[in-house]
Image 1 (tube, rainbow, N blue to C red):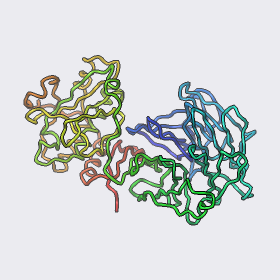
Image 2: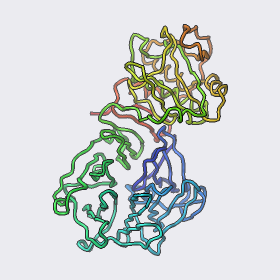
Image 3: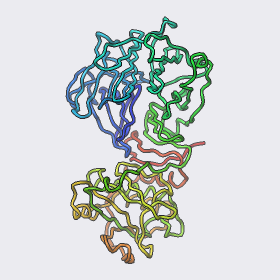
Image 4: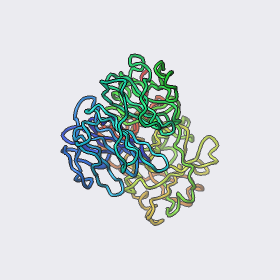
Length: 498
């Protein structure tokens, strides 16, 4: 949780989340928003700009703190992140292992570079860089090789901007300041480029990237709310006449502003970073992420913990009215409480897969399950009076500690979520924790003791209440994180405005 400012001109979607340049306010930093909605700083300073290499806490970057900034593009590769530090006229590299920042190219070669792309084939990293101030596109086959220049003799006023690479096709796509898109076949050094579509037809706005199958170039149109595509495999003669295909259209009021970064998640869903929110958007119900890795390896060094609660406290299948979307929300808040109890997301839940509930799936603690309506469910006791949520605790935790952390948790967010449901008209029973472990399946839920609920302040209750109202209406648009305003918690489910 937290806030971010002006987003750089390009970012990276990695296993842990989205990495991007944050140039808001007086600072400039490279930051990560996790898939569970937490924001952290990788390198740089949120209150200072500058030009300094070194450890992550000492590194300083330049930045433009307002507007639709076309600067500080970032790409992932070679064990770290490359940054086109626009104001400092530098190509920087952040090594994620050593957590240090170094300068690869400086102002002796560069002038206000604003975009870059990385190609990795057979562990060989090549860098493509829009050297905007000198009207060049630079090609660095390897970091130890001389810097080459892409030839654009057909346009003497060429000012390169957004750039992306399709390594399988040996093609680079670059956008001119006139918004004309060009393609260059870098497998043939010295070859000229050719035009792709027409600026008035393509309507390029921001960010150039590629589809997961390597056949399309993707971008955001000038309205900031449409993702469009062009063929990346068309011939030089056919490319100028290409007509873009609309991939997905958003309402900026719903998604919280203009699209700054986007990444293909599945053929019909996307990770989207707008000016205020990080989210998954999908044309179909959100499905769980793949967790097909070998379970023995995943569970090695972990111990089982059981969180059990009265079924009547939830809107479950044992209740007259079952709402799978609200239950997905409930599982999310339970996992948020578990993250606090374990002080880490290094744990897993073992969910049953509806409708047969005969198979299970393991879900890591950093995954957001709030939109997995009807795709996961917890176990129940034989008489359906106890809801049983299985945890596999953090590595290094003993069996006793794995269970004790669940027992001593206050389950603050879960309680507040259920209280919000009651305030919305749900007739739910009392909530409490049962430390039944091995007997949960065979016993009947005892009566909850009379006690005071754990405190959840107004900010917490407001955020959870919002998620209840929106989840109940049906889900297509899943918000992983709302970073501004700061009083809204992670994993709020929004309803699209038609």
